[in-house]
Amino acid sequence: MAEEKRLMKGNEAMGEAAVRAGCTAYFGYPITPQNELTAYMAKHMLEQKRVFIQAESEVSAINMVYGAAATGARSMTSSSSPGISLKQEGISYACGADVPCVVINVARSGPGLGGISPGQGDYFQSTKGGGHGDYYHIVLAPKSVQESADLTYEAFDLADKWRMPVMVLADGMIGQMMEGVVLPRKRDLSELPKKPWAVGDSAGRELNHVDSTHLVPDEFEATNRARFKRYDEIKAAETRYEEQNIADAELILVAYGTSARVCLGAMEQARALGLKVGLFRPITLWPFPEQRLAELAGKGAKFLTVEMSMGQMVDDVRLHTHGKAEVFFYGRCGGNIPTEEDVLTEIRRILKK
Amino acid sequence: MELIYGHPKSLKPIQTKYCPGCGHGVIHRLITEVIDELGVQTKAIIMNPVGCSIWASLYFDFDSVQVPHGRTPAGATGIKRMKPDNLVICYQGDGDLAAIGTAEMIHAANRGEKFTTIFVNNAIYGMTGGQMAPTTLVGQKATTAPNGRDPIEAGMGYPIQVVELLSSLGGTKYLARGAVNNAANTRKTKQYIKKAFEAQLRGEGFTMVEILSQCPTNWAMEPRESVDWLEGNMIPFYKLGEIKNTLEGSAQ
Image 1 (cartoon, rainbow over the protein chains, first blue to last red):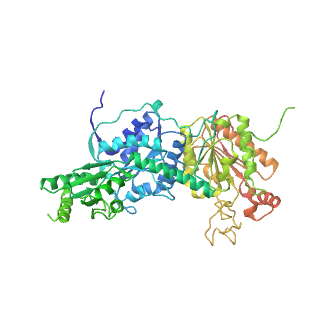
Image 2 (image 1 turned 90 degrees about the vertical axis):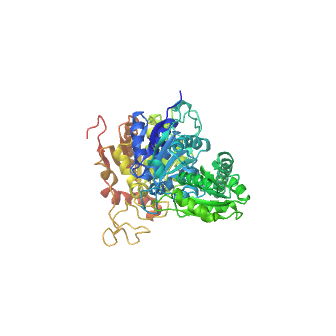
């Protein structure tokens, strides 16, 4: 029987999706604007006799996630920007030890303590290896409550498939707003993938060590090279984006998450005025849809990147359009959200119409 | 002929990288002897520490997980909660446990996490080369306390008595302090470890054995001198014995 549509807050929809995906261990620490997610997990994980701990810090929470995941459990934490900064040490270790887990960032505006309003200033720390060392991990950017649930659910599969942390980069808008959502099917824990590398109950098998320590340079280099080979496979298999009205576009808006929602409205208004505007929305921020963007850059269209930051993803847009297209930027920050009218004004300025 | 004493099965038969006179090797041996006696080698998981004993997984013949410096109790929390019938052992030094990882330690202990912490207190940072530890004694020299630990003028604070500090927390069930500077203390320490592991396997609550251990290299002493220094300087301040025992069936 198909699930019925329910009205849910993004934070709660992500929590329910995680439970349904087979998350058996959740560790969190209070921070706005993701608190409903931690509270949801407290209620529902404990009800289902799964593990929930309110940790003493974000640092501890991510290390609890790492420990639980090392035993093979589907394990998750959630936080918001300053808390994600604190988790970066643990994320680096998880990437170094190939430990799959899910990290949800309901991002707010920064730097510093900043504000509790939505922001997209975490693009760099999410996509460029926010901790120390050479690594990347998958980053998924939902634009709606429905997609936040779908991508959270899928994040667990991707984490297990590629043995790495997967981050869902939402923002305070996605986390706090209510929308209709059809939730994915609840997984039976017995159908989750087996993890022969996990620790515990070692009888009858070789020992397992979940470890990122390498003190022999040549061995360490080989490990890193093998991991980067896997990154190439991920780029080929998992890059995702959405395109609208691209074929005849003179100006292509590039935006993710909440900004993409705003851009969709701006594009429709522009089209109503007869302006040839399209929308390119990366869904995976890592791997970034660099190849497709490079193809589009050769076709004469200009690009306008819209972000709730001073401009972070725009660096990738410039990098992957290789100077073959003019790239403009429009951003709001400090917790402000661009309006459709703001973006339309920018579109008209660029197209001189 | 019956073999009555030999190399522990849970300890790999390889030479360690530890310095002459270091206490780590003895402590590794005590842990593995107890594991063998309890027959839980395939249920054991050791948390690899950051410090001289970072090579723990080379020596211990069971599964291991390595976490960032100080985060051992948090990582072990995740493991033990998912694997309650496994024997989870945290192996931490004084800098790891009582400096960078103080928050993780106190909260894991307070939650009554059901793993066992083996806390190796040698009053100095070993691997990084002799810096002042939270447990460095007043007046004891270190590369970062060249004139000796000076709690007042230089504001270096006082040595932390970890098991006493943790004893007020409701989640702690068994807190003992032993030493490996002589045979008598070593034998007693083994008994503490055994009690702690048995309590863990019964699922009673947080257990810790602090072990005073010598570091001749960073104390700039001969091994022989270092065991005497431990006896004369550390034991008077860090009292040996069962500091807290609220295990079921045990009289306090």
